[in-house]
Image 1: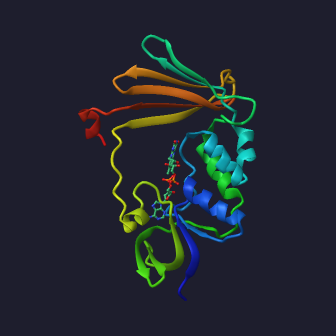
Image 2: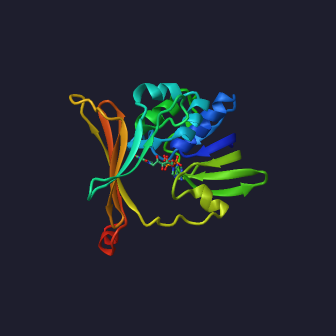
Image 3: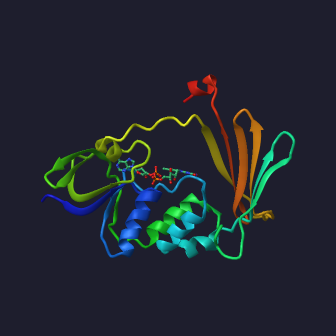
Length: 232
Ligand SMILES: Cc1cc2nc3c(=O)[nH]c(=O)nc-3n(C[C@H](O)[C@H](O)[C@H](O)COP(=O)(O)OP(=O)(O)OC[C@H]3O[C@@H](n4cnc5c(N)ncnc54)[C@H](O)[C@@H]3O)c2cc1C
């Protein structure tokens, strides 16, 4: 029998899961189709600023995530060559106005998934093409099956099949590379609750920020040379 859904969300990343949870909180059912065979909870951490916290509170997961992530107190930018402080911004105040935390990506995804109803996410479901079918959209999956839906929400990331079908422009290269990672060290609690950034010149910047008392997220970013580009 032909499957017809009210709302299909393509992609179970941060945006797809947040959309599904927001709809669920309003009592609206949706189906999330994810190409991977399980939640892609890999990755490291994401700096989240006040707007993100307003959204996470609206979704009902803010306090759960606050338990595992410290509130950052200052954002400090320094020159890596001279050590001079170029800028220092306080992130604390009387209220939560400047609330900033560095969220571990796996905990963010798990928090968004936790309250979704069973069957809301369907894994191993890669959308390969989309076509119009009257007032509905007909989705073709990689396994040869099809699903019709009244509403289609594209949350399928950088090379979005949905965005491509809608005729959006292809993504363009920003001109920057970035690497990031996490250091976990329960033996040596982190003392400073600061986002630290160091500028080295010629587009090279590095920094770090604690997620909690024992986890530090680090990153560096640069404008690639022609030699770097050969490795991409
Ligand atoms: C594995 C992973 C690790 C990351 N780690 C970090 C990090 O440490 N720090 C950071 O700042 N950012 C990280 N990011 C990026 C960040 O999470 C996202 O770029 C940002 O949150 C935007 O999220 P999104 O939901 O729009 O897209 P994405 O996070 O890219 O999610 C898109 C989802 O759609 C699925 N998908 C794609 N195409 C299809 C299709 N045709 N059919 C069905 N499903 C499809 C993908 O498998 C993916 O799960 C990571 C992203 C991923 C995917």
